[in-house]
Length: 397
Image (spheres, rainbow, N blue to C red):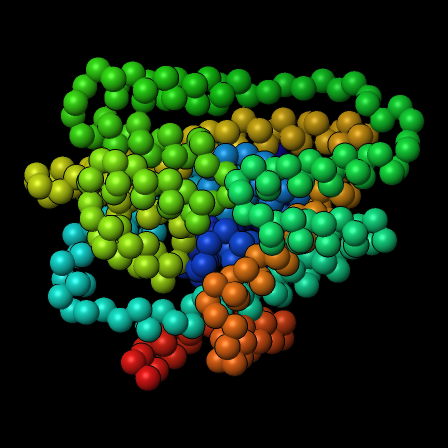
């Protein structure tokens, strides 16, 4: 266990994780800005470069990027047990909320819930990302090379959002950093002790899910196979996995209608926590027509199984990563990887702003949010509540 683990009480760390969960709106890019504010600026569990390093590592793995990042922070702070508790505190509230909402579709539809209530959430999230990109940019841009790599990461991921782009540009950034450095004897040998048990569990669940889907026609084993597969095949977070889920659950399996699916997607946009929690709603909706308990189990299967592969992978990869960093070439590559990752976050701010429509009102909300965060006088959760309250006041206007 690292010295950091003795410095920070685990109870306080988990309270900070809960604050992140309740204040994390808008997908993985926005979540990173919440981590920056709570875990770096306020609590100093790690520094800006350390956070960007973890973001880059998790971006190269399949699964929920923001979940893997905060679980890695838990692992760094207090080892595997704190990492597991971090996962539960981070994800369970959102899974419970989306499970409940899988029962409330008819009520929400009959009440004609207006999406205007959520109108300021997206531009508010942009404000979070602007501040995160600014703070990270100050740390990772140290010379002309890192400035160019920052721009490379921003432009490449702005014009192409294909899942394979994210790990590719990070690898390019690391390779360029090594090539330009021209150091000798950088591939020193190290002793690596991988925790193979986590990789073994990942493989067991992967093979078991496929086998269960082949040998039984029961709905619940099939749901486990579907959502577990989404968890290990998708890079880039909730925005990427949702179209994949739609193609199978709506178009192919007909577990729910398009309107039902999109209602759940709209709701998860306005709720805090990881976007992968949408799987709990989808699992619940796919399990309707039986008992209430059956639907609850279906929702929990969806919520748990989609997180499982990514978390098992980070439990395997993170300790190896900490050992591999002793290789000089890897240390040199981090300069370029961190610069590219900073550019990716900057691009996310522009993309989300365009998605919400570049209008005076949205620019104002994003700007006010950024200023409030930069001044550090109003906690992030209160800013989120303020955006929701403003959306309710201006709904229909």
